[in-house]
Length: 156
Image (cartoon, rainbow, N blue to C red; front, side):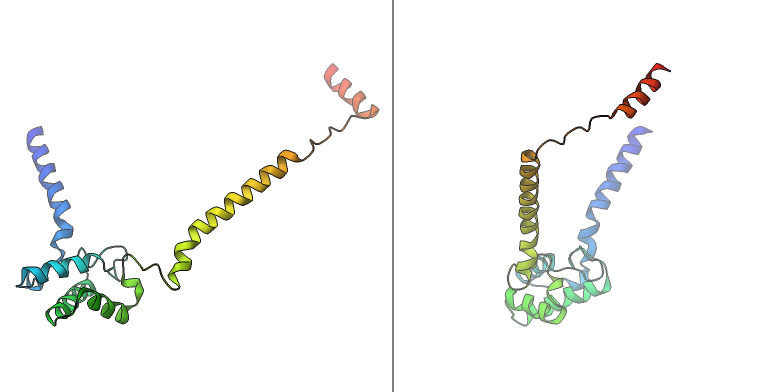
């Protein structure tokens, strides 16, 4: 029984791992294997606008299919890879790229993380430095009335 269960689990894992590959439908595949390979590579770098962090090559959404067909149409029309990407970005915005470019307004976004880390490190450094050089707080001595009350509490 356990051997059958292990085989079933193995087959199930293989099917689950192969699911993203099944996103490209047979009717989308180009006859020219070179163009198809280019289309697959371009599709891996384009974000599905429905699924968010999934490429159109992996997504089964209708919009992802439309984008895959658009990429293939542009390649068949003779566009270069850069021209296809530029066309899609012009139409859908830079959000469609899974790896946005590091120029223009995006440069601020790319630099924001390291800049914030540097500011946090500097703030922590100066805080600890100031704290280390600060005089130790003087302990307040008890007045006579407080000492008397303390003795009464300790004697009980």
